[in-house]
Amino acid sequence: MRNRYCIIMAGGIGSRFWPLSKNNYPKQFLDILGTGKSFIRSTFERFLPIVPAENFLVVTNAAYKDAVLAHIPELRPDQVLCEPMRRNTAPCIAYASYRIKSQCSDAVIAVTPADHLVLNETAFQKTISTGFEFVGQPDHRDALLTIGIKPSRPETGYGYIELPAGPCKEGEVTAIEGFKEKPDLERAKEFVAAGNYLWNSGIFIWSLDGILGAFRSFLPDMAALFDEGNGIYGTAAEQEFINRKFSECQNISIDYGVMEPARSRYTIPAEFGWSDIGTWGSLFTHVDKDPCNNALKGKTVLSDTRNSIVNIEDGVEAIVEGLDGYLVAYRDKSLLVCRLADEQHIKEWVEKL
Image 1 (cartoon, rainbow, N blue to C red):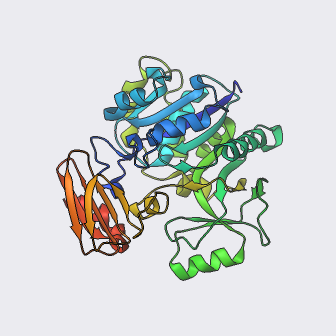
Image 2: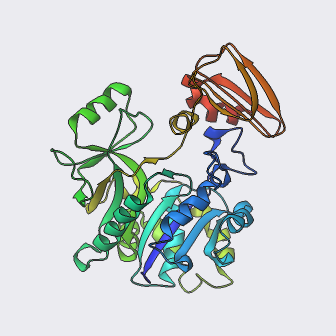
């Protein structure tokens, strides 16, 4: 396992989970599910049986470095890479990949968001190990692999991966036909009925040679920028170089910038109880509920209320009456009350606020 690396992307603020997730303490550091562990801690522990602790890199905002080290004390401070600004996932992954290049020329790399849910960790680890073995083979060093989730419903909140016609073979590496943007409900129903579409989990696996070659092919300006730092990564001069150069990176996701134009694209169809827990609605499906189908947290009295989420911080009391299908959340002197059906507007509302 010496050449296995894991990049954890932990720079977002999770504004769709406002008011629990805020700039000063975003979603990845919260225990929203009540497991006793934050999302980022759970992510680290999920990969730890198959990746050495010294081979993790967490890419985050400089303001969150201390929080990362508090939640994952096994890491050395130099394993936390600090972006001076948000520039989407492609620059984040490029930065971490060039750091890995300075340490291990034959690395195979898994890339994961910090804030996903996985219920069956044994099945997850088997899937990731299969991916590591595939991209580590000499004839697959240019392969770019993403984990696909077999859909359980016509979900409109995820992008989809299109496979060749026919049923998906769980656990087997399969070539990708194409990627589909987040669909409307009717299109999502068509994808599920077709049987050859998967949810795009946003978890990637590739070799160091494969991802660096892809950057040079599809984002050559970005690759050239990070190439300027060769000899600097892993030294005391690295942060100053990144602070100067990072703003010059194109603001683009790894999906648009690399995966869509790439030719050697693969996926592993998987089922391990995955959710990105990207919204209050997705959280609602994974927590316990009372007899009226309410998800409750905090000291709350409900009257004639059903199908709702009520999440109140410790030390605050709430009475909620007469709601059906609503979200009521209070934390840190901030209150949100909205219909669950309208939660897609939360990010927009927070920006206005």
